[in-house]
Image 1 (cartoon, chains in turn red, purple):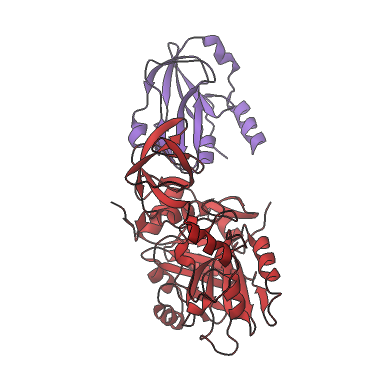
Image 2 (cartoon, rainbow over the protein chains, first blue to last red):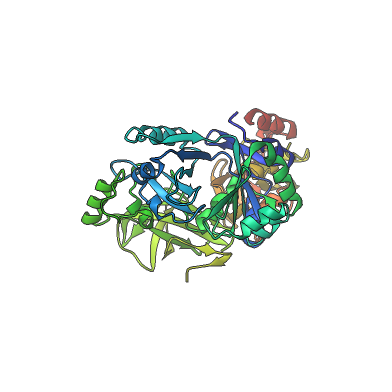
Length: 368
Length: 130
């Protein structure tokens, strides 16, 4: 069987259904993916995401290194704890991975350092890629932090319920956080980030404390949730999944990630910049659209999208949306389309509505 | 361990068959199958009156995870479909052998029933697959 997180025993005790997930034995659900999904949209749920990889980037050249490695610009981080979402690109402008980077100190101080969180399935590739690109810099060190577990607590009541099990001093720290910002507290790290479109926290916990923390959250009414509901929640929120919605062959311009590319300052060179600029000049050929199937059925990845009778692309992520009660999808297409188009579902052409690829925010439908 | 009632018959594709007498059987998917499928969100069933042979597709179960075909375990004509599944597909998860039934078939060849698995045979098969 695969690798286990420090919460493995808790998952078994709580009847988590364990499956292989990128080489890790992780819970897909604890009974019902749909119930867990609703719990996050209406109250609070928690996910073990310890299979993701934390890498600390330190040294005098840490900032310049990340400004070269990432398409987004870490110089934009102007407050301690602030987070930035970015693609890490290859020379042809494809996405090696998408990640979050936190500024762990005050900006521009001596000893400034950053914390990067990357996907689990791409861990080895990412670490190799990151290490290879340190060669250009004199003083940068990468330190993986496998001893940190990560628990994501998400939902409208997530903050309140999490705070109910934490010390007063930590509660104060969390209350000072703005969205997309984190704070360290005696080896723990609390960040108002997540992957569900809800308010909430991602907490990095030294692994020796994580089982007790998980149990305390459960006792406070936070529902344990599997990676199944994490996927339906993230798709409703219109967030990309690495390997499905983009990969090394896909440009961020074609993956609805244009907003994560920092073109200015023009003199900042980053890996993939030249290729992206050429693509931008040529005009992007492909784009992401959102699809909604109001009739019965479920949209699935790789189903073909038909626009004006022609095959124009395919679904990259599709699922049943528990919040909306119908199926939704993200698709990459090479043609303009508005209103409706068709999807080939098991040999039948079914009409679907075309929307911006974002479906639910804070528990509510966001398209009309 | 999933629930495998001893009064039913089974096929390897995880459908169960209940003999209702007068040559009519009820068909659904097993507890083991619904557990593998995860939350069922749609069930597509055939029309009453349609004829099927063993192994024909008789419908589709869509769970959050995947779409799965349902196969006719026996030949015959559809005499009833479970219309409740249209509004409440989750019955397949909550009561696979009861309110989550799919269809009733009038058998065209009762001799086919001799090939069906009993509960022990089906339990062995599930064990071997796990």
